[in-house]
Image 1 (cartoon, rainbow, N blue to C red):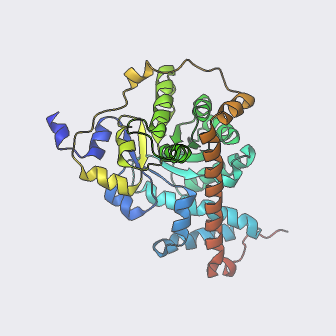
Image 2 (cartoon, one colour):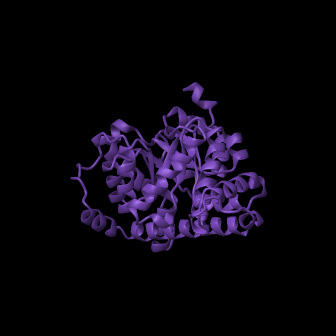
Image 3 (cartoon, one colour):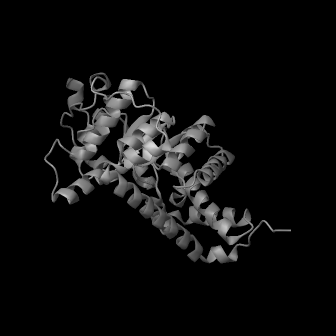
Length: 337
């Protein structure tokens, strides 16, 4: 106990078994904060594509994609994947755990195309010597995304089901054998705060309560799928999740946790919470999943919005790549005979 007093709160989280991930692609911040994992997303990549610090990576992505494509459209898709992978490779050098890399959000309702792009991302990593067990492929928590996760996991490709807002999404992801899910705590709070004309009282954060319900269910029924809380609006949300499997935390909050040495009580305990878990649901078919998810107004709106925003940010990445002089000056390498 005396030891706990001199640990900062990020260290206390780790001591309680909560693995900390940095929610950023900023390599300097990752080096500074020493997280175990890191998560990337299209919003971060849109920033990378226009940040001069990453010019070399952008240039390499354009070069590689143009030379290995027969059409501009094909090159553009490949360039986005190359950018994701090259950034991921830089992060892999700086963290010991998982790096999450997202499949194009515009494929969120297309299982077959999600699979094609996910396999290619893993292939690109492996060509550069990064083993696939270091990477989590992020797929949206749509029915189609979760079915893609089922196939990928069976092939030995680990997945992170993201944009999770409903219990239905969490149950389906666990049934599919996903390695990890990312419930978006802060976005659930946003929705309820808007709907109710103000934030709920402390200790009644609907995002935190949503994660608690999922965590209890997984622990009760022995699911190995990792629960990684994501998207926070304040430090209290993070503190109320102390003890959960993993948390992916923005650098500003991670810095605040590192600066605070107050004792952090453990909020999540697998044994006591497993006792509170709900009865096991039968295998969800598509109709049941869609109905259950649709019954949750917050989740229905937030999943749709999340997919739209990530898709818009992917278009920003593409526009940024195409605007580079190098895009036009690099010939397409694969000629159609």
